[in-house]
Image (tube, rainbow, N blue to C red; front, side):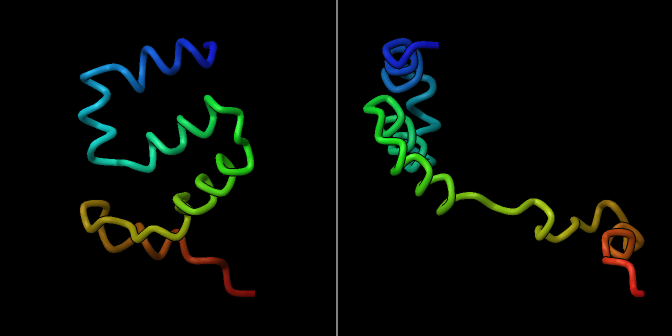
Amino acid sequence: MTRGAIKSQLLENTVFGLYIEQEPYIRELLEAYISSNFKTVLELLSKYSVCRCSLPVPHIFGSHAQTNLDPPLY
């Protein structure tokens, strides 16, 4: 997808615009990418990234799920 297509299909899209209003860093990320400001893209990705391995396991998986994710004891 070209940068122009990203701009027209995402940034100027009214439906996706509703999502961007809820997550404003997405607009900032896309605008940085479109303008080839890759340093900013990487900084934003780093700033807003979440390591999935550190997220707590929801209770719906049961108490055994968390213990299965604990690192082994040697």
